[in-house]
Length: 77
Image 1: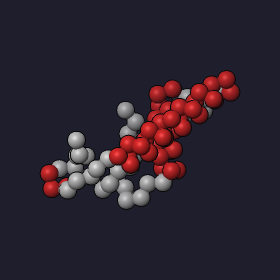
Image 2: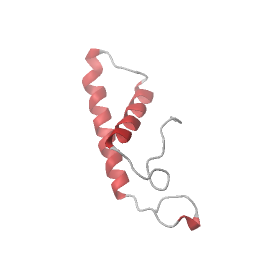
Image 3: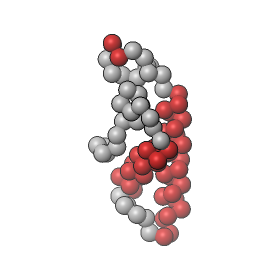
Image 4: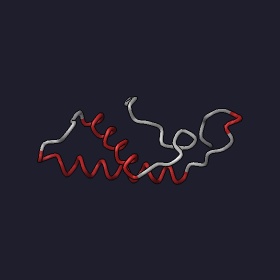
C-alpha cells in the first residue's frame, strides 16, 4: 500500500506524537485520493478525512495490547 508510513506501535516506536499520527493519516489520504494537495473545492473533504483517520489511528493505538515478543512480533488478537 504505502510503504513510507512507519509502524507507530510498540516496540517499533517508543513514543508516538500527534504529529506522527497526523503525518501517517495525511500520507494515507494522499495515497488513496491521488492528491498531494487537494483543489480548494476538495480541501474540506480532504482535511476531514485526515482528521478522521488520525482519530481512528489514535484510538487503535490506545487499544492495542502488546504482549511479550517471545511468540513473534504480532499484536495481540
